[in-house]
Length: 337
Image (cartoon, rainbow, N blue to C red; front, side):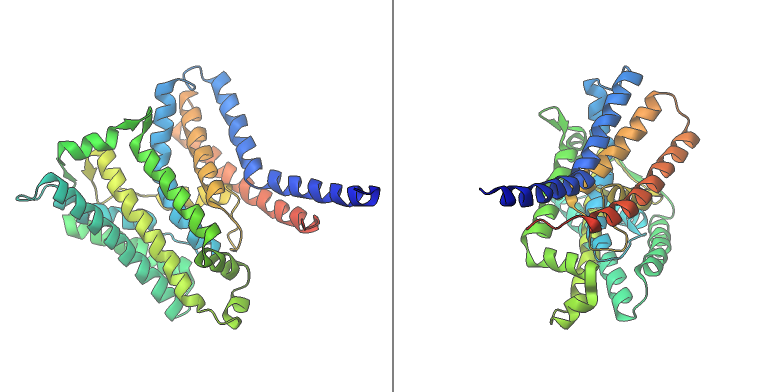
């Protein structure tokens, strides 16, 4: 290798390292630092029981954030995930207590119905937004109220409970000391990652978020992809609803309030841009973990609910500001050949 070639290769390697640090690696470092701080500041933080609690707590947010990542990557937003999760739960919940159905059949029907309700709401969100060119923020804000009202109307504002024992045992079971439901969330992250990185659909999602007009002019029907990401978000919401019921053994029409903000926060903290075209499933997972660790650690340190909300909000604001400067810095770095 000549001296000039070596000199040419060094800045590229440095640029690649800088991009990695500004991406998932940077979020991972922040997460490790947070773990270290709470391990020292809160003696009970690093216990196996508490780490299991953290994994359990971040499961729902991770599932919702997987679907939210698809939506945000195309430059959209879904504010209805919490309410749709409630609607999915209260529609599927009675199937688990229905007379004349065996437990396996009841569980299977509940999972299918919950997923279909979520996907149906996602289809409405995506179709209306694309058909009449209405910002997804407005449409999903409307769906937030429609789904919540439908959940309350369907149950007459009552909670569904007393699910089969096998269903509840599954919700509290563990595999290798880690909650089974968390393994399911990890599987969803892996599937989402593969879809985004190994399929034509995934490449179109990124391309639409970066330059939708260019994708359209190249002959692709961008509206189909954009509707599809909302359906995917609805599917993850339906799965999250089943997870919630399995964990807490109830289906309430008021569940999920504020969950949409947590999901969006996880995606943004994970490095995704709200304008679309940038983000990853690994970053989303790390963002959800960071939020879960932060909430748990502050709780063990005796920080009040109000103060935790303030701190979490500040973290989200900082993440957005950091993303702004990270984008400007990345634009100045040479592209790896």
